[in-house]
Length: 130
Image 1 (tube, one colour):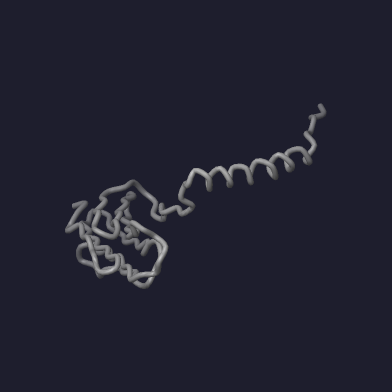
Image 2 (cartoon, rainbow, N blue to C red):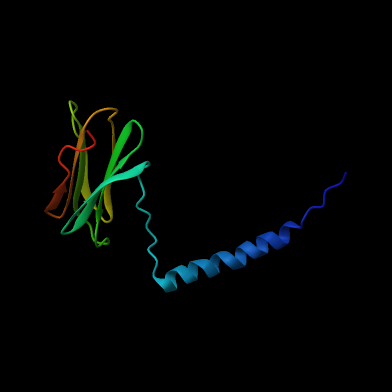
């Protein structure tokens, strides 16, 4: 049997009208444009410190960490370090505006520790997820 098809012009016209409207609404409400969910998995631990936040995420066999600045915008020294017990730390450091990381380690049945720093202030988890 024959299927009815919608004209493509109406759908495209609707997208062209709705998308700019949504973008202007987001700017008017002041919603942040950045998305910091760079790690997959569930949140396992969050450590806040003066100028930022260290976030640790856990999936089945992997642990991921990211350091996020409380006030993004200006470039400053940031770092994140993640180490599984018995392994070497994985580090991301440099001058960033929003976040350092993500860094990921294989940590099935192993403890991990994470450290994050933003412009001279830092936070650490100690050994967790044991």
